[in-house]
Amino acid sequence: MVAISSILLLLLGPLIMPRFYLGFLLVYFTCFLYSQINLVFKLWITSAAMIKRIRNWNLSQPSLSHYEGSELIHAFIVPNYAEPEALLRDTVKRLANHRNAQTNYVIILAMEASEQGHKAKAESLAEYFRDSFLHFIITVHPADIPGESRGKGSNVSYAARVACSEMVRRGLDRRRIMLTISDSDSSIPELYVSELEKAFHQADDPHFLLYAPPIFFSRNCFDVPAAVRMTDITWSAMVMANLSNSRGIGFPCSTYSVSQVLAERVGFWDTDADSVGEDMHMMLKCFFKTDGMARCQPIFVPINLTNVQTNGYLSNMHARYVQASRHYNGIADVSYTLRNAFGFGREVSMESVMAVKKTSAYASPTFWIDKLIICIKVFEAHMIPVTSGWLMFAAVPLMQFVMFPPHSMVAIIDPSDNPILTSDFYATLWNIVKIITIFLPFPLFATLAIYEHLHRVVDRELYRKAKSESRTWRNCADYISLPIAAWMFMTIPSTIAALKRLYKTNDQYIVAEKFFKEETSD
Image (cartoon, rainbow, N blue to C red; front, side, top):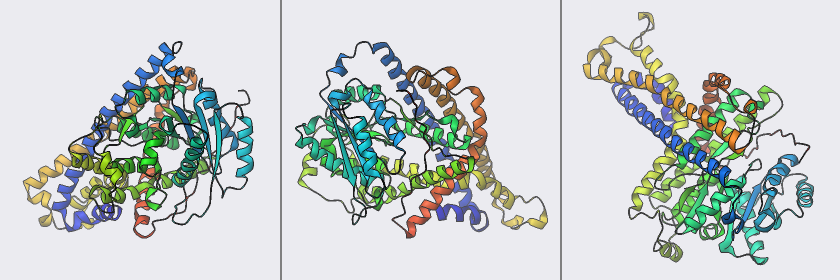
């Protein structure tokens, strides 16, 4: 409904209700400008924290006694469907290079039964990493389970249930098991595990936390179109900014960690049509199922991902569009959040009653405030992409054309019915709206400037890349593609996803094609 309303308001607002429309534009653009300024400050906080962690790590690497004496078992769930075997091997190999891999790491390779050749691929990878980890577990998610919606969430849920049971059967203590959900292309550095251990041991109750790192795109960013590159840069920046929240209300993206204790407490991952965006949905589920006790704990270490890459420019653009369409199907979380925030459809159990009696560093006596904040953040994540493209690009020019036509022949309304001409109040509102729209791009410029600096630091100090392999100021030419990226990979797919939600709750799950060239040397 929001998508339809924004389009109809854009077209009919100046004609049917110009006074209300002017007030609406003032409120919308003011709120949007505030949210973008807030994003800039939070991105700066996250960026500073990331740089600090990286530089401290570089200084302290020779002495890692707190990490080497770890008691946690890190179980990495790697869900995949039709991914190149070389990509999966590269992802797991990066984990195998960590110092504690053989004593503290468990790989859970989550295959899909519907993928042709999944058995041979899994067996090949298991043989390749035979002596690299404490355990290597293969799960095969059955196809067409009644009531399930296909996707990463259903595969992760099945893998977590099966693997957790298997790890306990093999004698591992469930309170020591940390589940890290990874994408098939997630490059997880050893620093992430170190910071995760530190956060776990410093928390008052680590089993009420969902640990979320920022995402980063530096593996193949120069091999994809500029519009694809800029889309992922802005996506990464928004994820980073969302992590800096003093109340612990944030959302993970792509890769995150949760203890087996918390996963079992909330009933693992949901698998229905409302849980397509499994990362945000899991945070929401943990929050509501524990009556607000579960919080997001940022781990300020970037997880390096690959941009969607295929052979050919148009093919690559289409593949990124497919990925964006899948991401924006997560709009189902809006209805899930509203239902749970206002108490509809929630189950009350003795376990949830006992949970609220526990203490936590983040626990708030005003749970209703936290519910309001989380509703606002979910709306911001899903409603701004649906509305901002239409209103940001067309609202003011269209209003200008209707109210002040270039020629009397194209005049649509009579001057006597024009509130801007007949009322000083509405004329002032119109001038304020135009002034605000002038300032709207500036937070974006600040965001990109912070990201540019951060990208260079991460590339050179964490990934040890040469200057020639990282972004330079010449890459600022990429920004020309921002309007294309905004419309093709944000406005259009988010609008379509919102409209589909009105009549179709279970959409077909399509994985964007990925091209990966494996390095020949280890």
